[in-house]
Amino acid sequence: MASETKTCQNCKSPFTIEPEDFAFYEKIHVPPPTWCPQCRLRRRLTYRNEHGFSRRKCAAPGHEENIISTYSDPKVHVVDRKFWWSDEWDPGTYGRDYDFTKPFFMQFRELLETVPLIALTDSKSSNSEYCHLTVEMKGCYLVTATWNSEDCCYGNRLSHCKDTIDSYVCFRTEFGYENVYCRDSYQLFWSDNCEGCHNSYFLYDCRGCSNCICCTSLHNKQYHIFNKPYSKEEYGKKVQEMNLGSRNTLHALRKTLAEMRLKAVHRYAQIYQSTNVSGDNIEQSRNCRYCFDVMGNAEDSKYCNWSSDGMKTCYDSGPGSGGKSELTYEGVSIGVNNSRCNFGVAVWYSHDVHYSYGCDSSQYLFGCVSLRNKRYCILNKQYSEEEYSRLLSKVIRHMQDQPYVDARGREYRYGEYFPSELSPYAYNETVAQDFFPIAKEQAEKEGYVWRDPSDKNYVPTIPSGSLPETILDVPDSITGEILECGHRSAQCVHQCTGAFRVIPQELLFYKKFNLPLPSLCPNCRHYERLKLRNPLKLWRRTCECEGQMSKVSAKGGSASGGNGQNVYRNTGVHQHGTGKCPNEFETSYSPERQEIIYCEQCYQQEIA
Image (tube, rainbow, N blue to C red; front, side, top):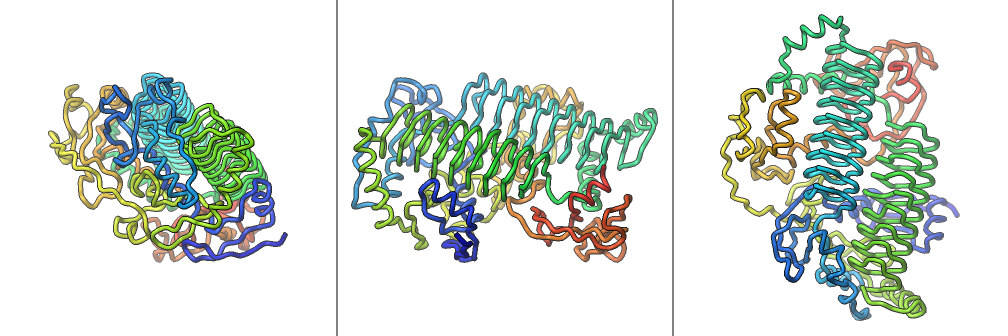
């Protein structure tokens, strides 16, 4: 079958469906998509809330206490984790007949507003009450989308980390703080894209470094400051002079590192030990296209992101995919030993489950909510195997003949993901706002739900401008104070809480490593870290190496060389000689970005 170019039903842009795509859709018996990959991703993201929390009343009879939940929509009912997993209730009692006079998606939303949902999703954790989308946690607080970590706070997408605070996408770090895309590191602070580093501050793209401050693109170095080497004694004196415990010093170093990053050469993509892959932040995978944040052992997959170990033949899956799953399509958090699970949200350990929400260890479900250990159910109603098969065929035909039409006139037939306007989350509560940030007016114009945060009436006891300069001036009583967020403003779109507290666990961390108190609330700190990651999108570009130096670019910026132009002077001899490098690639750095982008070969000549 030849490639076909279609027009996206949502953004009206052309997109191409390749022969291998058609083969996948045929294998799982779904029609080709009518939305382009970027619009499909954005639509899925509106069904995942990773860090917006609300206080709700538990909907379980006799358990009406206040609980913390990711759902602020009053139309949906939430229960605590313990009750949801208990035998005190049966979600099958909410089952209903399929109504052939209504579109399927309308019936599903009605069911979603009836069946209790789990307030916070977690498995096999202890002393980690305020964690969501987590597994095997211990002693953690406000950590989300994380696996097997201990004594961590305010983290997102961590794996096997310990004593790590305010970090994003980190693996096997201990005593880490304000890190992004770092791994196998110890006592590393304010660093980005580093591996095997310890006792260092403000590093970018460093490997195997120790006792370094504000450096870029170093490998196996120690005692460096601003990429300049020092003796051990000189380094110690310089560190004392810098006063790393001062908030003003750290603010200046952050600004300096941002300038140094622009002067450094950048690898086109972070891809390791992989074959025939495209995307960013991929390791130990093969035959994967347009994938992002794939942690390993993925095969034959496309348009997937935030995948755990062992994804095979999956399309449009994530965030939260993989986990030894195969043949999944269009799902959010549908990893962990799944097969043939399509168009779902938070479906784990299941087979042949479609258009379902929050289901576990089940088989052959369609349009179900919160079921566990069930088989052959449609809209939570139990059927025999033969009845299920007959009715399912009729339901699919009905979805084709009577599509759901949203407020903007877009049609949703069988093969389309849930409409964003039916999500239990508002756009600004979800990770869609993380990767496709928009203001309220634009969201409503595009047909998304927007929910203004409730006025919590916090009265800060310490204004943002009155925080002590160093942790040495902070008394233990600070844990009883309410700190004003430096972004406290009606214009902040980062789910700003306006005020925040410091918990004893983090105060001990700050004192241990002589770190000043943060000046922003946890949500605003999270969005500051997100600025350091690239978008989930690829552009076709050519290597900017010109032989002796990089391409002389008029992109400008504070890192510019002579005449306001960015330039990097090569230090190694490249395979293509003194002429321009001919290599092309797909990269998550857009052409408008100021960074200098090299292909793999030229990058290795400069950095290795």
